[in-house]
Each structure stands twice: as C-alpha cells, then as structure tokens.
Image: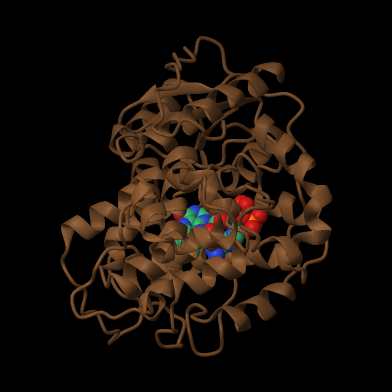
Length: 437
Ligand code: FAD
C-alpha cells in the first residue's frame, strides 16, 4: 500500500501530521515537493531559503531510508501523475488558508475523485486550526484579545515524533534538486529544519527575558524563528511546547500568527482589500517617495535603518516593521498595499496572512477597531533605540554621530550635517510633522 504526501510549507520531519500518518498507515510513502514556477518568481530571498530547506529535508528523509521526490510544474498535475504512476491509494496534504492553496486543494480533490484516490488534509500549519474557534454568532474572530482567551483554553493535539523509517516505492526517480539560486540579501539566514532546530535551542535561554527584550531594536534578541515557521521547518506547536507557558508573552506572539491565519481563511482578500468595511482610504500617489522608502533613503534614520535591514538580511525587527509601516501609511500617506508588496518581495518570512494582517493593523484598515493613533518616528526611535545603535548598524553614513542625536540629523550643526552623505527628510505636501518643528 502506497500514499503520496504532498509537501508545501511544512518542510520538516518532526511533528508532521501528514507524514507521520502516512508512514504509520502505509508500507510505501512518497514525500513529494513540486516546484511551482508561479511561486518561484515572487521573491529571490524566499526561493533560496526554500531550496535550502528542501535540500535539508531530502537529507533527513534519506537518513530514514526514503527520499524527497522533486518535480517541477503544476503541483496538482504533477502530484496526480506521480500518485497514479506508483499506484498510490491517495494523497495527504497539510491544510492551508490562502486562496492559492485552497484552489490547489480543491483541484486536487476533484482529480482524486476522478481517479478514485483519497485526499486527506492534515493540521500542522498553525497551533489551533484556522476554523476551530468561532465566536458566538460569527465564523471567525475579528479582534485578537477574545481570540487569545479562547485560544488559551483549547487542548492542543499531541506533538508527533519524526518517522523512524520512510520507505519509498521502487523505481521512483527522486528528481534533481537544483542548486539554491542566489538570493538578494547578502546576510539572509539559511533555510532548513536542521538550522531551525539549532536556532530554537540556541535562543530558548532568552525566553524568560522575552517581555523585556522584544522591543529592544539594538539588542536584536527575538527568536528570529519566523522564516522557519513560514516554511514549516518548525512546527508552531512544537515551538509553543518548548516555550511552555501558554499565557506567556512569547506564545502570545505565536497566537498572533494563528489569529491572522484564521482571519485569512475567512477573508482571503486580506492582501488586497481593506478588512474593515468603510475604512477610510485616501492614499496619495507619490512614486519618488515610495522609492525612497523602499531603498532606505527617506532621511528619517530609524526608517532607513529598518528598510536597509530588510534588504540586507531579508528580515526586519518587529518594532522596525511597525515604524517603517507607520511612516509609509501615516506620514507619507501611501497605500498600505504598496508596503505589503515591498515587504513581500524581501522578507524570508513573507507570508500572506501575517504580512497583510499586520499592514492592515498599522494602516488602520484592519480588524482593530482603534482609529489612527498618533505616530512620531523620532519618539519611537528614542524609546526603542535609545542610544542609536540600531541606526548606526544599518546606516553607515551616520556611523560618526554619537548617541541619540543620530535620530535627528537635521538638528546637527550645519557643517556637521553637510559633511554627511545623507538626505534631508522627505517632504510631504501639506504636512507639518511635529518632529521637524
Ligand atoms: P518573535 O518575537 O520571536 O516571535 C515569535 C513568532 O511569533 C514569530 O516568529 C512569528 O511567527 C510570530 N509573530 C510575532 N509577532 C507576530 C505578529 N505581529 N503577527 C503574526 N505573527 C507574529 N511576520 C511574519 O511571520 N511574516 C510576515 O510577512 C510579517 N509581516 C509583517 C509586516 C508588518 C508591517 C509588521 C508590523 C509585522 C509583520 N510580521 C510578519 C510580524 C512580526 O514582525 C514577525 O513575525 C517577527 O518580527 C519575526 O521575528 P521573530 O521570529 O524574531 O519574532
């Protein structure tokens, strides 16, 4: 008896419900990944991370006597073709929430019915399944706090061990895994379950201090597990279990991830349409300002530092994401969708649910009922990067400016300022920002 497990963004062997189930119920299992050209174009950084993760997964499966079978093309056509060629009874798959993923599931189901195979969906993408919690009178939670309360009361499924053996049917060509393509960010983290598990173990000693350190931009001591969670190199449940306390501040962040996935499941247009009906959307069009923001040359040091971290590492500190997104939407008054697109191109953890959900939250178009809050990037900078270390790390033009003066180069004595190769703050027609007065 044979089954195919179609892998998507669950690139691990530990705590993998679809893989574990197939390995216990079937004699032969084909773990399959289909490189989909439609997705590869989106982000060179993530494509590289993906390839590294696939290479690592292939090693892990080979150590267990199996292999990762790789194909290229339309995931549905390739999966069904292979399943039929090996005489599989059916296909297992981790359920996902995006429009793209659900269309893939739907098409797979139709094909499986046509060829008398089963299609079984498994949990694993999130800790609590996207449709598992429903408020009275609604199909999903719109506001985080009540979701978090309900979420804490759930009983998680059991965490699963990695299968000891994976037996591939004879005669299957595993297919070549192309060398990882070049990414765009020179300092990007490397993908793979091995790197992910190492990172988790190395970071865990900082967990007890998380509440104090997670907003310290220069300290840079958050887990940096997001790209691994994005590609499923780690199971979020396994991370939460290692962290322990379900009401603690770190696990609460993992719950935000679950939250936005359940929002996306109910509102798949999250990346393109305001979630809140009637949200005010009077965005300006200003390509030069958007370019300056994207390239980290707005003349606002904390914003430029964040955007340059993004380009250098394919990752940005959460506080910097909030500040750069706030600057784009509330100060430049540019459309949050252009911010979504820029982040999505560069972020290793770029994810439709988390990226769009957070952007909408900052832009005030999201589920959060609060209207636009005041926004002052200099105050944010002085609070979360008090001596300017974060800015100097990413904006070398300002490396000679000591202390918090680095946050307001326009206030430096004229000869000092003119000696810097750094732009004046971008001007926005009609705006008179308090921090420039
Ligand atoms: P930690 O602080 O160590 O948190 C642990 C994990 O919790 C993270 O790895 C992540 O999976 C989850 N998490 C933390 N904060 C959030 C949050 N606000 N929303 C959802 N999940 C969260 N995160 C992404 O994974 N992908 C994105 O595309 C993304 N885009 C963002 C865009 C904007 C404008 C903002 C403000 C935030 C965005 N985030 C996104 C959320 C957050 O910034 C990152 O998850 C976090 O910075 C990753 O670093 P870390 O792993 O060290 O996080």
